[in-house]
Length: 189
Image 1 (cartoon, rainbow, N blue to C red):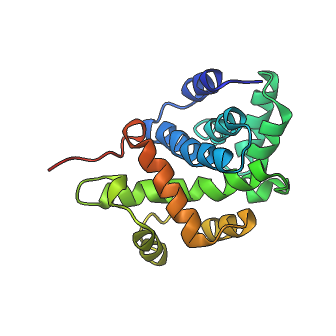
Image 2: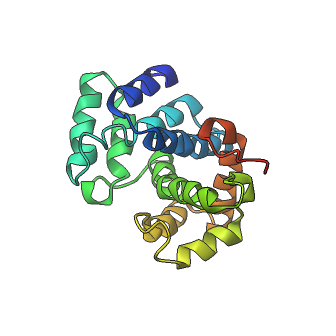
């Protein structure tokens, strides 16, 4: 079993972008919180979330990401359940999301990125200024964070079986708990 420290070392080996590293941490904050809520293996869920985009810089095109990345993780002995969840977070992989871990990773991925983007445009650049209504408003603004797939956010909550507003609120709170680590605490101007 790969632990959090080993997973983070893999992320840092393959990911130079600070924003992509922060994205991994943001997704991990949300996924780990769901692991606690569902009484699942928090370490395994955290490792999965940390590793989900580790290969994005070396394989930025679909379907290379995450397929080629999965092979690298297999070579490093990363558990099959973790690798399968990573494959399933890409709709084009052909790997259906069956487990709670797979559904949770998918549900949190785009939303964590979207919450981060909203935090950056708030007056104090803080996740503490983000609420459910601001996320829903920004989802309607197609020009804002246009690379974030809104359909994935909607489908993710649905697959997870959590009402969209509850899911958004849960992820905001999860990211607020890790605001310092995510660089989203904001300024006190």
